[in-house]
Image 1 (cartoon, rainbow, N blue to C red):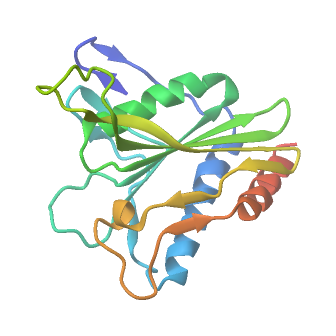
Image 2: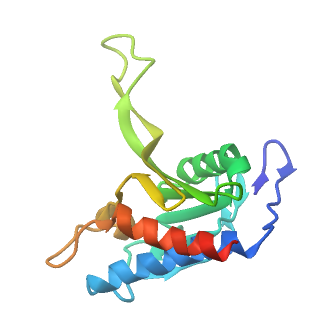
Length: 203
């Protein structure tokens, strides 16, 4: 990530294959879910493409855009960022960058892996309309848009808490669903099975 104003370049080093397995594997699960709706080619992967934002440039671990869209923009609608548990605050900074630098990034998923307990912490972030804490009266807007955590899931030692994880169809594909389509839902049990498999590979 390059920050224009600060003239700072931040480079993330991937220490092991486990982080790659986490976000790439979850991308496979996303494709399976959309294929079951008849949208086998509905999402295009853009991997670690570098995107030019208002305040700088950045690449994520995985990015996805709908294959059919009404604009020429190639910004993703869904972004994955993955790291070790010690870097969760850094991941949240990355998340805010994506949501604040483009009006088309709608969902950011953070995956934080803990080596100590072979656990996974997942957060889903979006831009939501929330009460305006600066609201002062008739000349101020009582509502504002802000980066908001919408889901949080922990999977430790094969036990999952939180969830399910739900990706709003329209935010992913930039259109309303039709018959046979709908929100993309990852049940707690599906997530538990997948990340138990991943953590076993890390041993």
